[in-house]
Amino acid sequence: MWESTGPAVTVIGALPSLAAAGTLAWAVVGPRAAVRQRLGRLARPTAVCAVLSLTTSFALPKAGFGSGWKLAETAVLLLLVAAVTRWSPLRELKSALPLTALAVTLWPLPLVTGESFLESIGIATFWLLPVAAAVAAGAYPRRQEQRRRSAVAEARSAQRRQLSRDLHDFVAHDISGIVVQAQAARFVAATDPSRAVLALERIEKAGLSALAAMDRTVQMLHGPEAPTTEPLPDVSQLPLLIANFTSAGATEAHLDLPSLVTEALSREAGSAAYRIVVEALTNIRRHAPDASHATVAFTPAATTVEIRVTNDRGARPAPARRRVSRGGLGLPALTEHAEALGGTLSAGPHGEGGWQLTAVLPAALPKEAP
Image: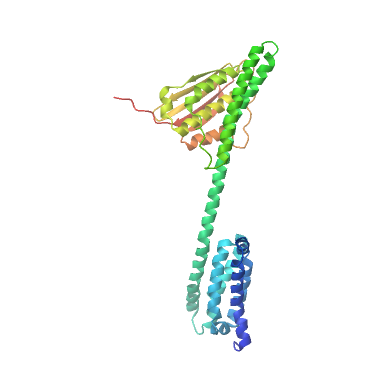
């Protein structure tokens, strides 16, 4: 150990304190944007200050202590610990934090003579407490910021999923109707112009419906300050949906909707039921366009409502069902939505080449008057 006397030795002992104070001043002085960047790069300078502190603590202990530099140095290092814990990347924090903690906890040990090993451990543990407090002071706002970012990311992801479902459930249904009507108009235009005109009117109606759904989707992107839009469709609009579906293609659809179902389903469950029926009819139009018959039946029970959409094979063999993409649209998304509401959804072959979709949603049926 060096002889800790003389002004030169005192100046050397003060170097870690001056370096730590200069590092802290460099990080917090300046424009706000520059300060934010510097705080993120504070780990390496802090590690250098910690190495200097450890070196002088064991090489020149009395020089730093006698002039009071060590106490000031410890205070600044604790501020650096809090700042590094709050702002530094984890990969840099893993190296800077242990070194700084050692510098703070071990600096008194070279000054203690004649103490036992257990007493030295007690002294180091005592100085570990302010280190833990500084780490907690930096970790709490860091954790809060991470939670806020996670919440924002989850909200954005949920909004994207909602937008994709709206586009798939409503816009795709209308566009598929436009395609069917355009194909029908192309075949009858030469022989029956009046039917072609009727098909064009239906195309116009479906196009306006698709535009309305897209307008609603775009307004959702504007955030909570956007003007209130019309509510999403529910089961009360199913009769019109079934009528439009029957008039647009070769499949005749029938709806069995008891009046109490509309009251039993909540707003969210009613919107989900409408989406389920739209998805089922869209799949019939895509995968069984020549099916002669389709049935949409709602069956109320004590605490649930069952939705069953069934179609036959039609005159021609139905094409293979298209495998749903991994994008989370269609039946997988509706299944997830139904399960989130406390219900179930399944689909599969039915009868001789037909298809059936079955969903069960929670409901609160009105009690009968005594």
